[in-house]
Structure formats: C-alpha cells, structure tokens
Image (tube, rainbow, N blue to C red):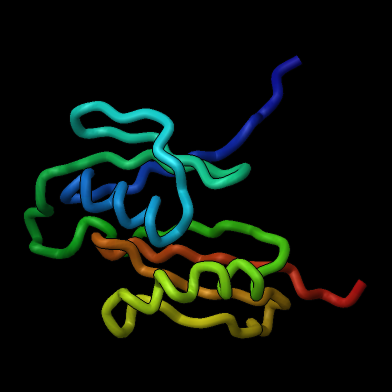
Length: 126
C-alpha cells in the first residue's frame, strides 16, 4: 500500500548561496544536500527544495506570488527563538505573531527572492 510522506515545495532563487544562508541562519533549516543549482533543506519535519534560476523576463522577483505554510506547535516560542535573527532583515520582511480570523496564530517572513513564508499554529478552542 502506498503512503504519502511529505510535501517539499520548490523555492525559486536567484542565488542559491544567499538563500541557503537565509534559510539556515535566519530560520534554522539545515542543508542536507547541495549541487550546482539545487539544495534540499530540512527544518524538523518539513523540507524545501531550493532551485537557482535565471531572472524572470518580466523583471519581478523569482518569489513573486510564491508562498508556503509551515504548521507549528509553540508559535510564540518559535518566533522568540528566531526574533533576534529576523530583526536583522530589512523592514517589511517580517510580520510578528498575530491571530487570524480563521483561528490560526501566524508570523510571516519574506525570503531573499520574495517568497512569503507563513508559520502558523491552530488556536481553535479545544
């Protein structure tokens, strides 16, 4: 019987080196594999695949209209752990934790090429 194991989105980037540094130093990912224009990164039970690409012909950032969501437990603790490193990013690239009307507590981070990363926790009453 087959089993689905995980989803690992491709995240397009203009500089593989810069994105590896961003995800590893700012967001705690670990680079498990790397070759010329590709890297596989893991953070606990989630993973992403970085793919270095040429610039878009329309001049927009590679991550424009690209995003992914990471479900977590302990959203505020995770943010506090990352807060010092995230504070080094330019203004507008981090949104601190807040509650959404759809009963998720989230914080948002934008990577080096404009991909929006959501970290979120279910806050529905139990």
